[in-house]
Length: 326
Image (cartoon, rainbow, N blue to C red):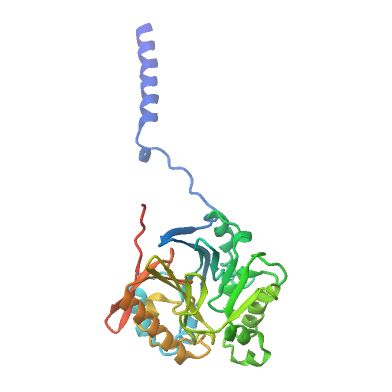
């Protein structure tokens, strides 16, 4: 009897030990983790520079808005283009990002994201910046590709507070005038709400805004050069980063929808101030990138925001930069 009791106890202990040693997939799975993702960033070396993408959020629209956004499109053309990219969202969706450049002499933001007061799913740039190891107080310059809310509202959410208290803001003189001159308001396709948001973003920086000529190859900071790309707005530009014979282009809104606009670069965009000029700037920029093979990034480029442009028939394709771990 005693032998049987001991045998049973040993058997129970053995089963308990076996249970704890079972493969993880045979045990009960932990509950799904819920809540917001942490702020996201990705840092790469570019010559002597360090370039960090900061994910601000995302923006999108409903299917009914596609024809307005792309007035030259037809549904039977949009569908296969989106299917080719395995797009699952309804309507037009794109990320919103910003770029932090440490040149060794300057800590520079190229655009600075939006805010939830304007687009509810934006406004994460400052959190992403802090998560990357820097603070807004350390940024000495903010370069604006143009003064649209999802590119500039990171400057100030309330029109009073400077989110980058020690920064100079650099923007083309023509874009600054376009957004601040009441005589220009009728030319803004998106209307008064966009105008008010743009003005709110730059208002606290009065006396800290440096307006510059829109000129090819203008060196706005050491190693950072301007590439004019008017059309989306009159003073819309890209910025070219050059270090140790390496070149990278960061654009603002050359393209919002990479799959559609690269395949059909000559389609007009309904939110461009001058849609014909916007087409010209887009085709010229894509052609240059495809010809040179240089690295590029952009505010609405698929996360994590670095890649290259190649030719594809009469259009182009975006090839993401592979993640590198050394």
